[in-house]
Image (cartoon, rainbow, N blue to C red; front, side):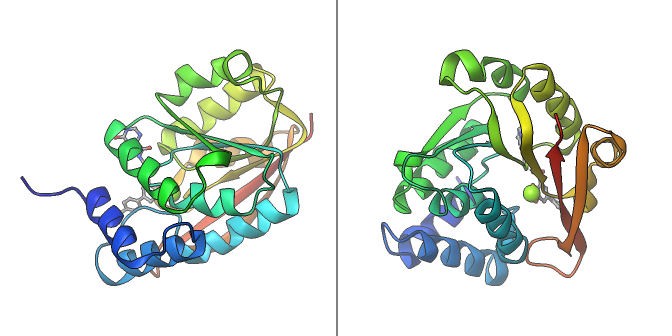
Length: 214
Ligand SMILES: O=C(NCCNC(=O)c1cc(-c2ccc(F)cc2)cc(O)c1O)c1cc(O)ncn1
Ligand SMILES: [Mg+2]
């Protein structure tokens, strides 16, 4: 039967990237998605904004919601110190299978803990199962209608501390209007929009960075 898009993306990584070289993995995925087949990675343009926020926060613990093929997982992990931890949640087992291999090809397995399941089920288990006190950075890139309920869930579970940063992809396209309204109007957050484009296209999109004020 026909291969899936994530399988074709992985094949491009294994063909064009150097094992253990995360930058070459990121480059191979971006070239594949720009010139061969579009895929919903955060991409190179928004990826640079992601990199700058990760470097600024310099997080010890990161939560990523929505792994997909592991592109942003690799970008984030590459910028973390060796003792930092990145937990990434993926609901779709077919995506998870590919992401594990992309993360391994990039040599980032040590810092990354990929957990399969729904964010709604897993977030309440973060403290007990992973010994997480709070997350310094959360990258939201999963189902757009889960951004708001999961942000509220993280608040309720005490997973956000003063200064914790939420960085959300796709706040314009496909869009997450209820989440945007919440973080921009809640006294609990200071929010900032980074205008960009939908990965590999000229369509407007952007990242919303929201600092939890406690
Ligand atoms: O998280 C799961 N999917 C990816 C979420 N991400 C997106 O949907 C997403 C979509 C787009 C996008 C934009 C324009 C367009 F025309 C089509 C798609 C871009 C992005 O940058 C995303 O991040 C998922 C899957 C599943 O089967 N079960 C549980 N969860
Ligand atoms: Mg996205």
